[in-house]
Length: 133
Length: 133
DNA sequence: GTTAAAGTTTACGTTAACGTCAACTTTAGA
DNA sequence: TCTAAAGTTGACGTTAACGTAAACTTTAAC
Image (cartoon, rainbow over all chains, first blue to last red; front, side, top):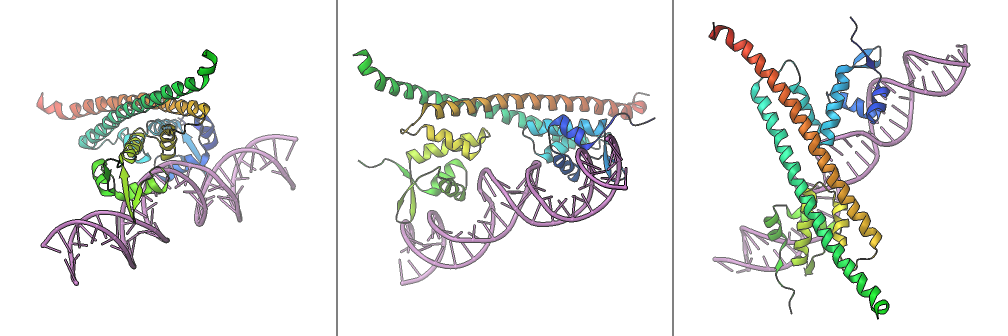
């Protein structure tokens, strides 16, 4: 009737390539809730999954607060539907924003393309006249 | 033989919906180079275009430093081709990252979808037994 | 000529997400 | 038993991108 596999802080740190400080920080912020064995932290499957969510949120550009809100949605004590809708909206908005960002990036790339063309033309003018003479 | 249309700091601030502080900050960081009329700043078309680039970079998730590098590429004194290639690479990488972020966001959305389904099932169990009696 | 609006410089404050000691304890291994 | 490795709790430091307040000047309008 154990709790299943457990992890030490450095095991998780290695697995997800973050520092132990980072993991402690997430606990400080109330995102992780490891149990204790004396002074030492013991992380379960649950904590590990939460950490994965946090890091996925981070990659996606969410703040810790936003990730926390999402994580809370997985809480069995899911309170009100409104809060849930609110959340889903935020994530949707973020998706739209990312798509907009992609457009901006593409515009920047196009701009640089233009610069490159001009750059190439300039290079030719300097390199050719004597060679093609 | 004027310099064409010019703008005051607050005109630009209004047009792009940023504070004057922000514009001064960009100058401080060497991204903008308005001329002066006594103490007051005078912005030209060039500065305006630069500001647009900065904000586009910002929307795209670039840091000011990264935007500066891009802006410098538009400088007629375009020095070395290597620096240029380096830049184009960075922007390409960022595009890839954004695409990856979109994937992460979609994964998060899927997760929330699951939560919602469970949520709905739970609501039905509570709401139906007496109504459907 | 006197305000009100806009502009200027200087400089300290703020937030997020950790980094980086320092000082100490606990555990595993030879 | 002694040491190295891993862990713990403070607590101050850091970076980016401005916000904000103070104190003063300049310009435009009446």
